Image (tube, rainbow over all chains, first blue to last red; front, side, top):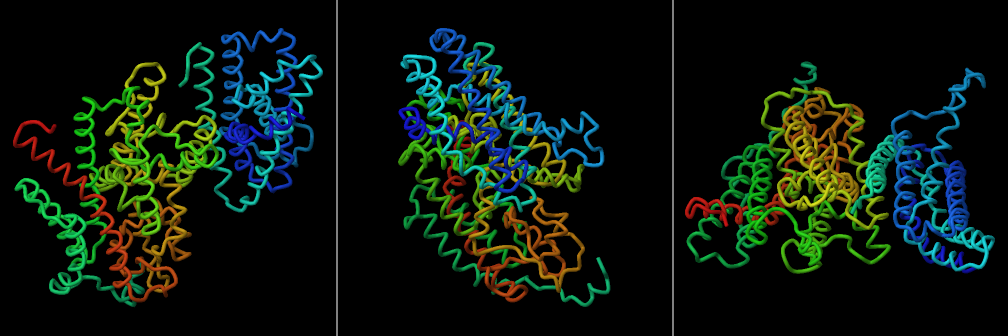
Length: 210
Length: 391
């Protein structure tokens, strides 16, 4: 319950951190509301796995990641680079649907049909590994839990609390009639990707991007 | 142009006689006298001279607009002068106050950074979420405070919509000036997909500003830092930011406007401009194309410096949402089909009256908003001539 309440109380900030990744993608795909909910589910699944992976990792390494600033910076930097590569790839290549005429034969066609979903899953995973302020707050509280199971449960409920704030995102599908939005979404994904790429590289190089 | 139709369509006479022009310009003369003087004519001879020059400058231009029936030709003179003298005034002010154009950490911590309208889109979501303005400026008082810029922006949006970008923005005159230097464009065609870029930049900077609580456009992309103020280069990141904004200034404000004869920074990059387009929806004035008079010569489309007229929009009888109401299309239209229009009124009727009403609002706004910067810029130039120093 504590994790859920913490998630609810800091979810707006969490949504602000996820929006630069999620919004351009939803606009870029130009799908309807229901399809957008599926897309959001893919993103959230990635984010959940990111949270849980972190809970395991932090516990497994005896929380050394939390204490060691260098390791923490390395992790955030890597997450930013992964995130940026996903966004830049998404913005540069036309995703579209796999060609029906080719059936299921072509591996490339199958990949073309599925990789946009992978982009969002990977993006969700990378945002899950980001040290945004609400996440840091959750980490601090999770560290006080008695067992690994409790820590995982805490992250799970925290995830549910923050996810509430992302529910409005699929309603961007209401604007699907605006034909320019997919192009704008992809352009924005590229710009945000470039920004994250620089932030990631700076952090990996041991610098401070501010 | 179809010559058969051309003979059928009567040329619109928007030119006025000198006497009638003076009469129509009279309200502007009175209003600018009140607004520019603030009810008190300067007694100092130098200030009086500068005041007189500024007053005459605006009123002669307004008279010519009415007398010749041309809008953009004279608007551009005032608008470009505004931008150039703003730059002169701002830079000398910075040198006077700080000794350089660069911002120090001290000034940022003291929240003494002048606020400009380009920051507005990035401040809205963080202000709603955290009740904080994510910019190290002064809320009230001081030079270019946040509250004063918000008030001016709201007023301009209600009065002019995106007309702000051609009548009020103190940066817009720079790429406008460069776009007029060559007679013919070297690069006449621009892929229309690029007109979506300002929206993408807007989306990117608004989202990243909300995530990092930092005005990302100001830090990373604003080309006008090259002619106003910028961060002191104290780190690799600031060096990268400096390279980016200088490149953008050279590319979007100087080179591309020169080569394309379009306002590339304003129409292909500026996120504030994209946001301002939305205010065209709530504004009373717009540009309409009367299909009955239109010869389909596409002069308006070729001349539009902001790519706001397309073949589809001509067919639809209106300019696009991105229209900055500069009046170029109205000036080049041979039949008066493209004209200023007031929402809710019939298209193609009372064209001169509608144009005049728009000009009173837009020109008065420009004159009031620009006058102090123009006077300050002129004062600096006079000081340079008389004392050898602008400071």
